[in-house]
Image (cartoon, rainbow, N blue to C red; front, side, top):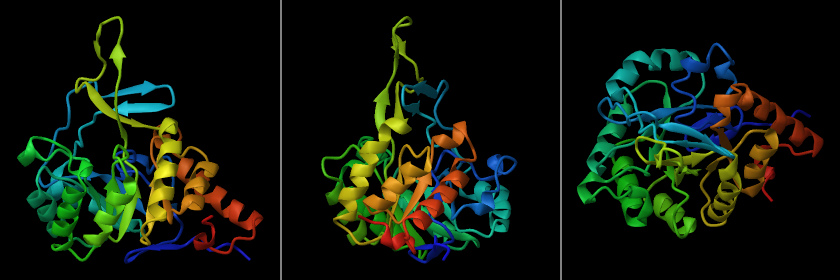
Length: 300
């Protein structure tokens, strides 16, 4: 019997457990000539705030052993630009669209969520809490469980869409943050975001990135993310989307064994756009070989 790859995350039903990580797949059209985007279980697009945002100055990405350090700065077209320019294409795919949202205040997060609630074709919102809270001196929302809960609660009050909260890895105890997000109304969790990092050019004696610091993604992040997913899955019962360093099917399978319901391919998309499709096929082959009927029975 062919394995059942379908999964449910909140109100969203995905035909397979593979999506892409926000910021690594543009808005879908950028990859459409290289891969059949409609084969994905869902598509997660770049971060959107209320108004257009230019992001950071260049250079804003550098390759390092085991991954990338980026400081793109969440460049995006804003809600109206995204809805006008990108949603017509995304709606035609026939798969759930997950929009990563962010803001620099709790009020902005809530306003973005409210605006997307009326947009046809959007299946869920991924709340990026690794953003600076300008009202409190620029500290990240995601490093304080009370602030995480405040943001989630505000977003929850403005939308009935499925909510996924994207947690940061650089916290003392992921379990505390997972509980805070779920208790505030998050339907699922995305684990995890990038790790804060820095690269210095030793000859020029200055940081490589214009922003000085950025986020580390790629293979180096993978074991860290697997551990975080495992811990969170022992703590909460909501679905978890595992992400971080997925380059081969085995990497995705690790997340599923650790307790994830679905996975997101990120940095690998820059190297081989077919990676998500290979991962889908690899998961199906693994399940068939091990006699696993559905994704829910993979967890160790």
